[in-house]
Length: 483
Image (cartoon, rainbow, N blue to C red; front, side):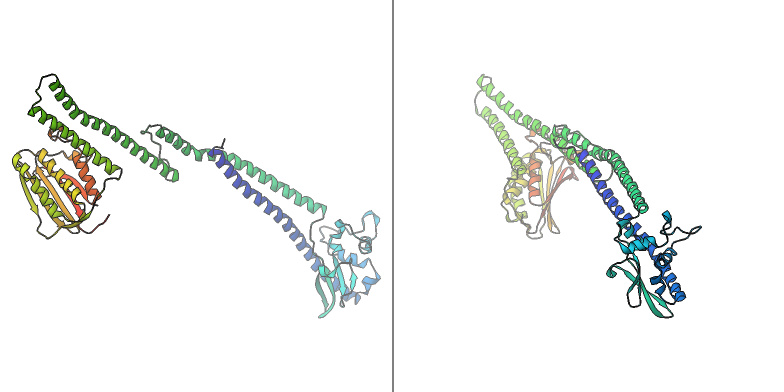
């Protein structure tokens, strides 16, 4: 079983904090040791400089270094004189346990020193004469010693050397450093505990919106498309919540449209089938005779059903991207004139005046599918023929506006309410008050028109007509757009 994201986030934050604390602990441990050693060496350099001054004075008083060779205890006294004095005579080496002054130094020069004594100041300082011959101090390799000239009256009389301390060996110094490192370790441990105490609720708080979003996503996947989540702050999670709500709204609208589509299709198909069934059963029962009138009625319903199925087929092809267009160079004006001529007789028969106002500005060349454009114009003309009252008028206009051709179909009453104009191109949408099923429409013609126009990179819109009907405006590109 995989760890939850809350715990993974918690361990990630804890690991990052732990890595920082450990690095800080290691660096501080090293810094404390090196820093204290540097401090001790600095203190010894101060003492080293004081010893230089003492030796210069001793040289001048005694007239040379012979007094150090004659009196072995003189060297330790001189070194001892550089000790800092605080409220009295400092304790001198060799005075404990009744040992005479210089006894410890005598031991240092005569035998191998233990590590504890070998790192003391007295065991690391030495004196050479002007010829670099050792006068005093323990035997030390001179390549490990830092020397400083001792001069009197501008003449070099000797060299004072000090071997720098490489590590701490004094018990008190080591104890001090150990306490500091222990305190630093305790601080690091406390920081880790505090980090753990803060990381867990913080991880839980950060994961809470994700958990809510995951629960909402699960409900959405189960079909609850009305599910929404709180947007929250303006960050990545907030943006994700907004996208989720947008997705849920789209799925809800699509589901609502799908249900309405299924219901409308069922209703549209049921109507002609019910009529056909009634006609056939009436003939079978002898209520009606199987004559030319009944055959004409049956043929009309079959044609109605055939047109409906064909429209549904065209819509489905467009949805799956299988509706093919064979585009070529055409003249929009010629196509529109041919469509108007084919419908002129039907408009005269119904008593509707067909007025064409086509621009004389030359040829309206376009790269388009002539069959689809003929279908577009025929659908619009048929729509006006069905839904315009007898004695009305349909005005068809064509003009050039820059790189596009504008085609307008404006009929007379009855019109469409302004709130319904935005839905007039929706599938199976029909204004029941005037443009009803009795006239033979299924609400798919204008949807097909919209698909054809968009496939030609154009635009189509429905507006109120000046004479009370509906104005359909189409804009098609006139340049050679090849898509």
